[in-house]
Length: 269
Ligand code: OAD
Image 1 (tube, rainbow, N blue to C red):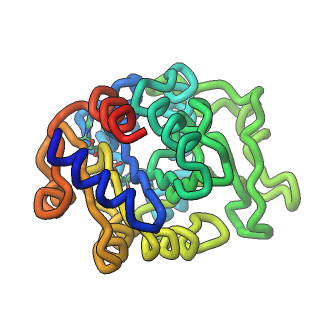
Image 2 (cartoon, rainbow, N blue to C red):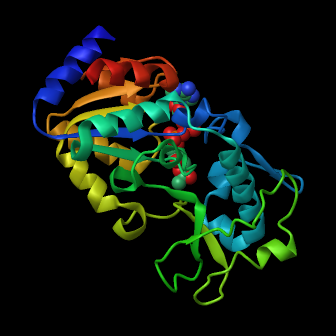
Image 3 (spheres, rainbow, N blue to C red):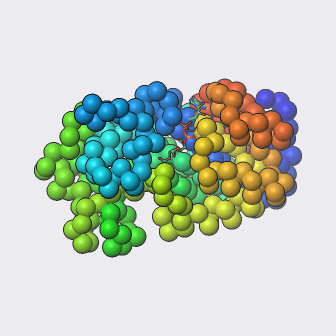
C-alpha cells in the first residue's frame, strides 16, 4: 500500500484529471450480485441463462417480457442495497478534488448517486437500471421507470397491469431498460463515450476498482490514460488484466474495495 500511495501522490502533483473507474465488485459488499459471479444466473422455463445471454438486444427482441422480468428483479435488488464504504470514499474524494475528479462506472445500480456522487462528475457508461427509453428509438430521452412498477420476484412473469407502464410516454411503443447490451455500441448521447475518452486522455491518475476488465470502454480509458503517462491503480479481490497493467504502474491492491478505497482516499486527502 505504501508504494501505491507514493506513486499516487506523485501523480497528483502533476496536472491532470483523477479518474475512478468502477465495476460490479464495488457494489458486491452492498449485496448486489456481480455480473459474472454465480448469483447472476436466471431461469426462464426449463432454460438457465447467463446474464451475457439476456443482456442483449437479440434476447429482448425475442422475449422482451422475460428480459424485463430479469431487469425488474435486479432493479429490486439494487433498491434493497445501500451504498457501502467504497461508494462513500469516492464521494469524499470528489468533494476533495472538485472539478479535477471524475467517476466512470459500469454499474447500473445507482449506488454511486445514492451515496452522493454528483451527477456532473458521474458517468454511467452502461446506463441506469431505474431508467427506460423507447425501444423504437422515437426519442433519445430517458424516463424514470414509474415507481409503481414493483420488483419482480424470481420466476414470476411481469403482470399485464405492470406491462402497461413499460411503454414510451412519447409514442406508446414498448419501452426498454436504459442499459447498454452486449450486442450494442457505446455512444455519447446515451453512454458518454466521447466525454469519457476525453477525460481519460487528460488523466494523471486512474484508480480502477471491482471490474473483471471484460468490456470495451474501460479498456479504452486505461489505454488512453496510460498513453498520457497516467499512473494506474487496480483494486480487486481477484487477479485480472487491469491488475497486471497496474502492477507495472502505480500498483495492484488485492483487497475488497470497501476496505482499500477508503484507506487510499484517506491517505491521499
Ligand atoms: P464482473 O461481474 O465481470 O466482475 C466483477 C469484478 O469484481 C471481478 O473481477 C471480481 O473479482 C471483483 N470483485 C468482487 N467483489 C469485490 C470486492 N468486494 N472488492 C473488489 N473487487 C471485487 O463485473 P464488471 O467488470 O463490472 O455491463 O462487468 C462489466 C460489465 O459487464 C457490466 O457492467 C455489464 C457487463 O457487460 C452491462 O450490462 C452493460
